[in-house]
Image (cartoon, rainbow, N blue to C red; front, top):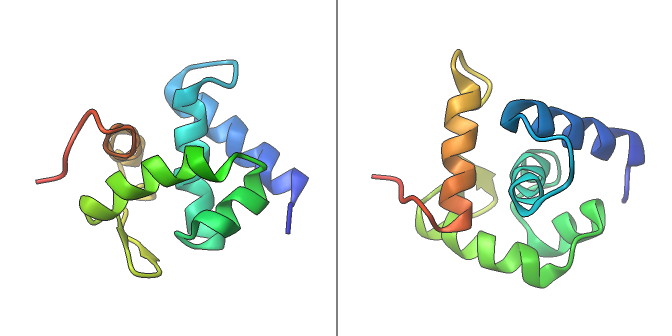
Amino acid sequence: MKHPTLLKSIKKEVMKIHGITEETDTIKTGVILLSSVNVGPNIKKIAKFTGYKRSEIAKRSKNLRENSVWVKDKVSCDWFEKDGSLAFILDCMVADGTLQRA
């Protein structure tokens, strides 16, 4: 299920949004989030797609589900709207546990 070209594009976009040029935990969070749109909010599928450890995804998954970013098999996001980059960064903060959705 790994799609190296798509994964590379996702990483590149996340790095662009965050203004970071290397893969950090912040970038991993963004990749997990953006990958969930493609493969679904499923730890096993995201791990297979990204190559990240399930444990790295699980802690973020818990925060995303508790804050209704991931609801059942859907991703609730407005990242593709105007100013979507800001919404994406905020949802990354939710995934990392530094912010909660109201």
